[in-house]
Image (cartoon, rainbow, N blue to C red; front, side, top):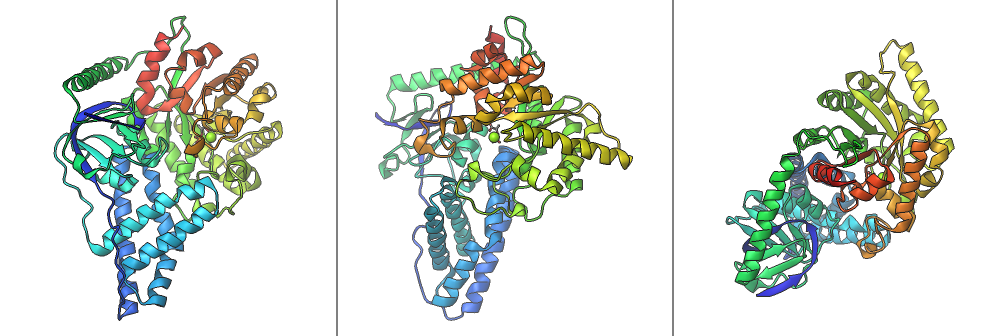
Amino acid sequence: MKILQGTGASQGVALGRIKIIKSKNTNVTKHTIENVASEIARFNSAVEKTKETLGVLYEKTVREASEAEAEIFSIHIMMLEDGSLTDCCESIIYEQSVNAEYAVSEAAKVVCAMLVDTNDDYMMARTADVEDIKNGILTSLTGENEDVILDENTIIFAHDLTPSQTINLDKSKILAFVTEKGSKNSHTAILARSMKIPSIVGVTGCMRAEFDGLECGVDAEEAAVFIQPDEKTKSKILVRGEVQKSREEKLRTLKGKKSITKSGKEIKLYANIGGEDDLDKVIENDAEGIGLFRSEFLYLGRTELPDEETQFCAYKKVLEKMQGKETVIRTMDIGADKQAACLELEQEENPALGYRAIRICLEDNDIFKTQLRALYRASVFGNLSIMFPMITSKDEVERVMEVASCVRQELKDEGISIDENVRLGIMIETPAAALISDELAPLVDFFSIGTNDLIQYTLAADRQNDKIGNIYNPRHPAVMKLIKMTCDNAHRAGIWVGVCGELAADTDITQTLVAFGVDELSVSSGYVLAVRESIINSN
Ligand code: PEP
Ligand code: MG
């Protein structure tokens, strides 16, 4: 037996046989072509075909994972449409009279080098997307089918898996993913988690050809991969698998139960969504409401801003489907790690500290008012709360409230009915907001603590940068103090306070959050029942 160690990216155990997936299209050859015009036409039709394929992958990911995870494919379509890669390909074909395959590989190198040169973590991470797009175009050009035939009970070993490879594989045959590269926060790891497939990343030395076809055990909790496991290891994995299965069955029995602590405090247990396609999972997992609808997903992957009607229809659908359960919709949080082509934002040195979210809305009142009009018009179809992101000062909250009141008045003047009871709350996701939460609380109806950003800003640690993953510590005492302070200040002002960042789904911390006094927890749908169990077991 050989044991390889990595990082557990998606929990679970598996026992199966190894299938090594090699990276595709690595051996592109260069040759001269006679007819440049027809090569450019061949290239353009491959780009169109790639866009179609990406559209299909988008739909498949929405079905198998969620709309939020599928968004990566609309970003890829947008990257193809913005022209930086395709224009570069065309010039290479034109200037060097070379085949399109070679031009695509060279153009991808140029674009990746430009991204790396920015020295910005977000931009540098986009190189993986350029690679994925390049492979898509090469597949369209060569007509090579990406389909990999899998046997039952397969454990996939790969150097790294792109999101499109991951979503294309036949998941009914896959028990686990093991990759040499990759990080806990890579898109593939996120996809694996939402599809509930155990996954271990960063497993050095897993790509040895002789491993192909061997029996293998995976234990993501121990981040261990066992090649040709001995009988003792196999039975340990099987036992863990059984424990896991019965745990899932036990969790299912919590559907329909209330989320009440031992001391009798009822916690609102809500779900986070990226769009209406995520609602089936919300209902299936028995979430009691929506604690965070990341409305920016309506803006991403488009070249035009979504108009009032488009937004109204999306919000109405979500509110109707939630049948009167509280639905917290956050106004768009664009900027930093979520760039939208339709806003044409300038490149910034420090986008996470730059022009984003409420800062854009307060600068560009048209965008903000359009979204608020759509939200208030939809309010009569359900139980709406509106939440504002990236707040740092009292002045911002006061200006937000002014715009909201102006929009309400405008709609009333137009004879459009709105729900007068729509609650307005803010995200506490900057240390500034937490530190002045005593002054902010009287101005709003609720607080929702966005721990993903609160941790990054408190610890000065980029949430996207794996190199400093050890510094991005959700349990750092400074973060805990800010959460506690926010809860106390909310309650002093008589408003409710929730947590909607990833920390809300960490069941080892539920007891602490409950002790701090949080009234609401909002998590990805797949974690709702596990968090309910933790609440029930909390004092
Ligand atoms: C957060 O920052 O914790 C949060 C929930 O918002 P997002 O992850 O969308 O930035
Ligand atoms: Mg945030």
